[in-house]
Length: 310
Image (cartoon, rainbow, N blue to C red; front, side):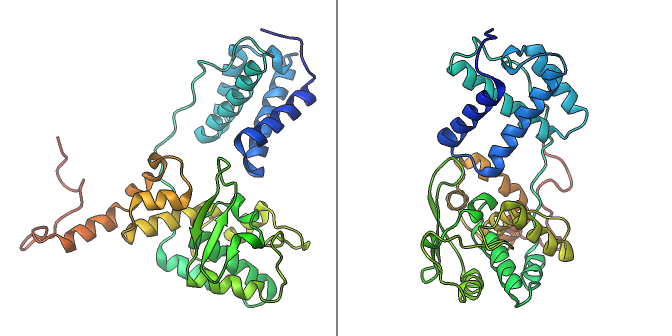
């Protein structure tokens, strides 16, 4: 394994540039990857080692230590960050082999994403007041739920990306660096129109502004969502609204592949988790629609109720 090479700061800076150019990572994802790498560098420093002196045992020991304190999803992401970094080092011929190869990720529980019910969502969207900040908050909530965009995509929106007349939104350089077109309904169009009516929005101007009058940050968006969600639901994140958007579309009868396109998922497998969330609504639709679904004198149970299948 190679031990000579650039200093740590130079190595990390070059890796950051590669992540930005090769993958189009958002600010939030980029910070997460670099934070994971910094944690590992500190772990190595405690053993008197540098990043380019890493062994497989070092990676395994770090992951085992993290698994004692963090959730499996967080540990898995940290291992993914290390794998990305070391594969980059091998590609640049800074290392002969990837020391993270063969280290296993912790098992993830099969948890489904949390969603808000339609009545809860409707109640939350009515909470912001008609003052300047309330108009902004309502527009943020309506757009997140009405379009399913990610928080990183929302904060990056400029005037040129929005067409209120047609109800269309152009998401530029979404996850994976790809553009896509999404639609926004009448409620979101109205909320955005009221928020923007006092501003002269140029094509390169950010749609959403923070307290400083500059482009809003994802941390502020997360605070806005949680502030209102707690009043009708529980703690929630922008991703909760994205999950709710997809689930409610599925329950309303939209084809899964169309939902995949709107969400910007690369594969259908990622979108298929919503079929589990929508199974009750699908079952009810089946019971109402199929001529021989109803049983005389008894109510049919959902799949999985009663006797188990062989």
